Length: 124
Image 1 (cartoon, one colour):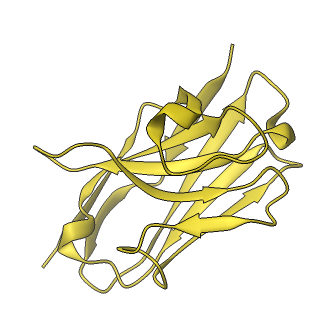
Image 2 (cartoon, rainbow, N blue to C red):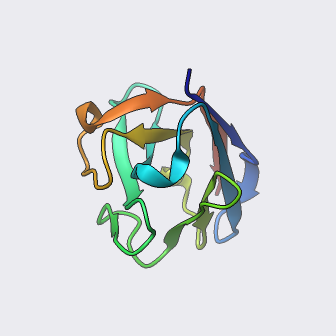
Image 3 (cartoon, rainbow, N blue to C red):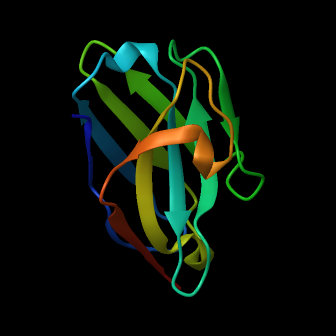
C-alpha cells in the first residue's frame, strides 16, 4: 500500500525558512501528482501547493505564492516544500498527499493517500 512520510517540520522565527520533505512508497511515484495541505488548530485543512507528475506544472494557494516552492525528485520518490519568509499564520500541521492521476488540483478529494503530517510552528 502507499505510504507517505513527512519530515523536517519544526519551530522557526518569523521571516525564517524550512524545507519539508515527503517520502513516498507503494506505487509508481512518477505517475502521480503530489500536493501539500495544512491544517491550523481550529481550522479546516487547506490547500498549499500541487506539482504534476513530471514537475512541469505547479500551482500555489494565494497565501503562499512567492514564498513557498514545491518540487519533486522522481528518481528518489521524494517531494519537497521550500518555505521562505515564514509568518506566524503559516503555523499548522503540514500534510503531503498523492493525487489520483498525473495532474491534481486544490481539492482534498482529488487525493487518494495522505501522510501523518509534520508540525510547523512560526513564532513572532
